[in-house]
Image (cartoon, helix red, strand yellow):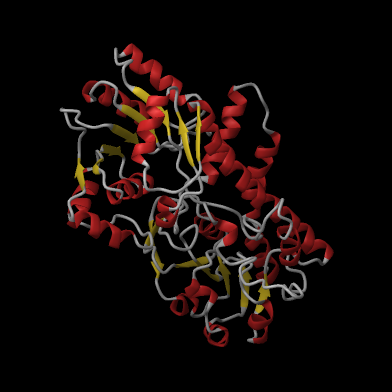
Length: 452
């Protein structure tokens, strides 16, 4: 099949490469000439494990091409819309880019081509697109909702081994074309109407975000009653009705999906006349959780004015260079406002925008960033940080205060090296064990933040 993917961001490029690998002829389109120039040079524009290799492979066999504009001849079977839908000040999704693409596609697509919406959009957007096409006298075009469920850092696994495929369609012919497009991917297929497909995406992310905020609330209680949230999560996760994923307490979720989608769903509910109190609380808990490191630093240091604080990790999770809604960015701004000198360090991210729009340098070497520091916070659980030589860290820092914001460090090991360690709800830091069972993968470091 001939496939257009409009938007070469994270979702668009990974999706385009997947369809190219499956044997389709793919054209990726983006209005950013600088991005298209980089892609034509065979360079991946963002960090994702395995992406550069797959990109080179598909570029070498000419199964994927790049363009700055939608072709005028319209020779394609499916046009996938994968442009950004950033949040407005109200929390609602900004759909201007989506409808701009729809207007352009209406001028060029052949009869009965499928317009498939891959972007995360509010419930009812596909119906609005159909109505817009009708007004533009293109009612012959078929509209579908095909939400994505890619986890940054594990996107290639997810795109080739999806947990499910959701086709929101209004007729069997469109469903058949989407089945052909996805042929070669083994996964359950849910064929439903477009509005339900759109809600599946939001509901999925909202539920996972709820699990994270719930375990963080449990962790905060554990801190006050002397319990260990890691063992609480272990005991909960062994119940098959609950499961272990997304039950690692910390300083909250971030990234391009959960913060945006939870706020958007609260807005969607409000516009429909329903007060989604539970999800509003999830959002509030996540924002409050980011204050935990700040609270502990104040306890340790009394005043943060003039103190050197190192934040280990800038990307919102390991395996990506995405800093959208990163807790490190918020912490950086709060610490700067209290007069601290803040050093950021990350294995992949080199620069980040500060709270006043300035460019902030990011260290690549943790030991260099820790030199003479008064305290440090583990923000992102990169392996480079979880396997530090703690004796060397103690010798490097001016004061040995360390906050584990992801609850991934072994407390006894770190404290035995001479560190003063705090975490989120770990109580005494008793090791997590299950008698007679293999617990190797029960609470693995990536489990709590998969799909974020």
